[in-house]
Image 1 (tube, rainbow, N blue to C red):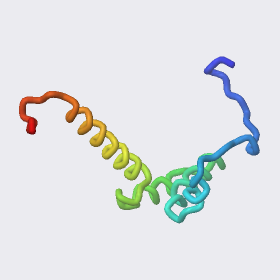
Image 2 (spheres, rainbow, N blue to C red):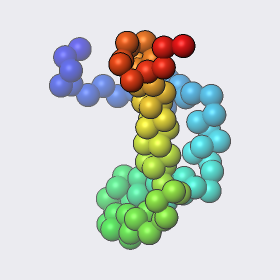
Image 3 (spheres, helix red, strand yellow):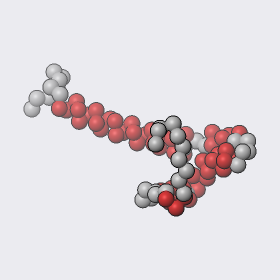
Length: 92
């Protein structure tokens, strides 16, 4: 099937990752679901997006993902730097 074609998939054929059910049912996910329901229902998403935007940054899932990626990146960078022979490193 070419990449530009959409294929319908029955809901029963969708698979989820472990833990995703808890995430979707969590209280923190409600603002995201409201945006999705408004969009899928053809309603104005403005109020739902405003509710989402009003959340403190630390409570937004995007913030959590970016934070996790930042730390993963920092760990990878640190490991790479340790493998390099840099003049300012302690050679003990």
